[in-house]
Image (cartoon, rainbow, N blue to C red):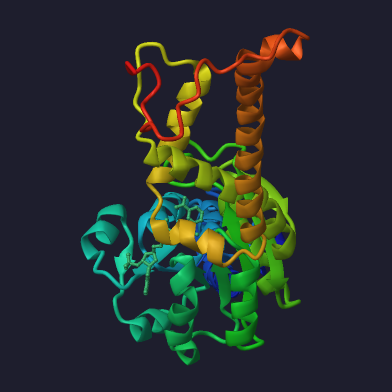
Length: 367
Ligand code: NAP
């Protein structure tokens, strides 16, 4: 059924609702028609009948048309800024769900964009003049600030929704709050999966979001929900948390994961005929992280204030482990060298000490 709240959800919804209302009135008008009266009437007269209730049977499927219009009203016009690895990956899902996508990037991705059903708009002025409902920032973490500052924001609609998908969250939140005018809405998100880990399905994969600043109007609240619905519809596990909290957790999980993946990548692990499950996990980890750009990894380090501490802890943990191993090794060697004496026997005496004057010879060399 068509609910009045959904009709008034977004500006697009409002215009669809107005359109639907016009459609109804025009139908009422057009559906006034003449029927011949019963045959037993002596004089053939015609009488005007007017349909007054929309529940009355219609000569065509009016409701289906209204529903179609309303569905269209929940569809968003989304501009993706940064059409690299992750931007393209997201675009496919947005288009599959019926949203209109305009891609914009430093490099020319026209052919790729068109092949998946998106428009490619290389000029940022042209892009903003499309008046997208959502500006979705998918640039590398380290380029985000300069990209954002270079956009002609004045060409956008007054209450455009800005969303980012950066793998760190406090940083884009602060930049958005600094750069965007107060009448723009801000939603910071992190889909915690990528083209590799989410290539088959997004079912149960975590999607973190923080509604940093959303205007109180119904249409603006509904627009954010429409956007979040994209991920709900794909089955993501929706996790609402502050950007600060995200970064604390992410440094201990995502940064450690990427660092471990990159260390293992340097070891050039190879598959063997006797792979254990654990080893397969390591190979998978390398595959999942090696595809990401170094910019992304570097961004995780530079733009999450908790990352340095995690790197130090990783270093300490490695040192502590080595210490433990070397400590045991040392004990074994000591036992070999001094074991008998330590058990109360005679201390081993070195065979012959080389004479002071004689040249130092390697052990076992004939004297
Ligand atoms: P990335 O290396 O982090 O970003 C590549 C994108 O940044 C490309 O669109 C690239 O544009 C743009 N870019 C880089 N330097 C630029 C510059 N100086 N000026 C303008 N644009 C620049 O790789 P990514 O995997 O596509 O990630 C994009 C964003 O999604 C990142 O913020 C990342 O943290 C986030 N994210 C990624 C994943 C993932 O699994 N990959 C998952 C969740 C979130 P051109 O290609 O046109 O040069």
